[in-house]
Length: 224
Image (cartoon, rainbow, N blue to C red):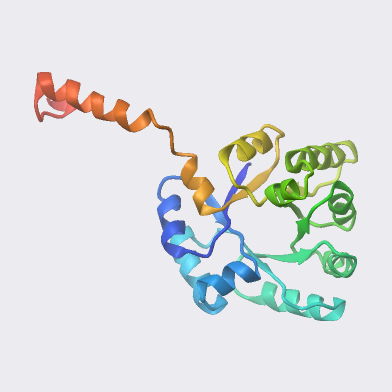
């Protein structure tokens, strides 16, 4: 089943989108959490209240060496929430991922900028891979192309890792990635908001109302 995530720690926006979309959970990183100024101990219970106890949320380790990464990840997973630990797909990060997956703990390999980087993380057993679509584009490369090649390699080599593309700036990037058959996606709020938008929608809806009122006044559909 496809998994839709929001790349935010803004609880009001999470509640807003959860009211109209099947939000599976949220993805965070140290920058997102620092910007929100919320402690994890405040955020996680609030998310559970909004999204339910079966929601799945992603939290990134801060530690920078293998042993510390593993220890921090284990402590995060011990919390009474459904968490996946995010670990950068660096040489050190891959070592931590291997150790965590040896214990079958849930891991996402993050900060993926190349096909080979993501493929190595998949070989190490990462449950999710997060290629940074727009950030790859800013380096003059093809973010959607990286996602396409990664999906192809996962399929060709029968690797169970799921792609969870991140870093979007517009809806076209989102649509291009969805066409590739990825298992999940995480959207920043401003891009999720754009998915609803089209300049013709509101005028069309308003015209429906005007046409109805010109004949039936304020009666509702079941009243006529």
